[in-house]
Image (cartoon, rainbow, N blue to C red):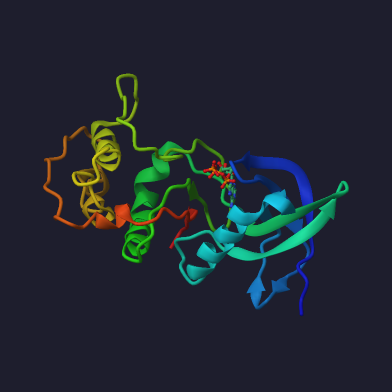
Length: 224
Ligand SMILES: Nc1ncnc2c1ncn2[C@@H]1O[C@H](COP(=O)(O)OP(=O)(O)OP(=O)(O)O)[C@@H](O)[C@H]1O
């Protein structure tokens, strides 16, 4: 069986509660039938504390055919600096600047809708990625925690602000669903003019999935 050949780079992309994500280069053109990009993200943790990452692999594999989720190429144990590490090989998803969010939000919402309809909620970052380039910029929707948002000093336009407020409503029964958000003026209007969205009643019961056990999925938003 093909062995994934990779080398951890010195660049750390980020660190979460369960692992450190580094940039790594690969030398395989083809791995398990998939053409690997030359750069991937490797999320690593100590093998003895790898339960969460192993769960993450299972979740990501459920969505391996979805263009809306981060691709997981596999997982493997390595021995580095006298320590056994558990590594997850992921597509490298750097973030895009704020002005591109409107375009790409339209891509991520169907993905959210899809996982909600499968009884899973998204409690992790939303990562934005381009197919043929690595984009640098601000992470716009990073780490949504359900706290009431404060926008007094925000530079976001009113429609975007309203959109975020609808996403961040603390009460799940009044929070907008992914499908409702797809019809929000922020996504429907090409103009950046300020417009306050009319309050819409959410369909009753459509957020009941939020009461199911929390699992995590990392999204990518691609150019599809
Ligand atoms: N596939 C990826 N490509 C590029 N950067 C990534 C990728 N996965 C994670 N990162 C970066 O690494 C950081 C840590 O990600 P990770 O998933 O380990 O934790 P988290 O979700 O941010 O935090 P927590 O685990 O506490 O919820 C992210 O914030 C992101 O900046």
